[in-house]
Image (cartoon, rainbow, N blue to C red; front, top):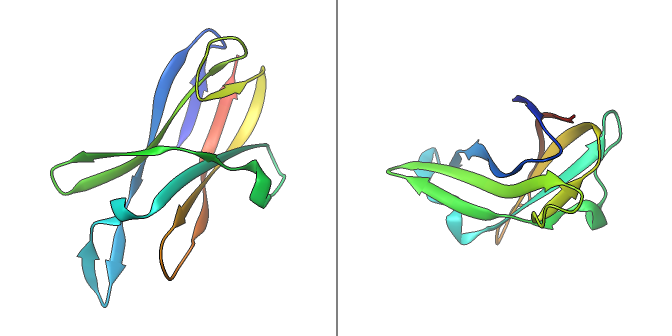
Length: 106
């Protein structure tokens, strides 16, 4: 995922999430989804994550978070720059953290 957004925006970004248990697809929405936005090239630290929410469309699941420029009132306000997007799914037994794309705020 490679997004380029205006710093005037205030919108949800969505990341598709697939989960399996014992080889079968499962609904991941009982876990907590959160996101980190780091200057490109830097890893995400535990304190960098901001809670997102789930969106479902039939059997498709998306983690999402509202992003925008500074002063927009979005859940995650970002200054002009390029960020690596990280997603964390905090379940009962596993807590995967994945790099899912980049976001350019212009």
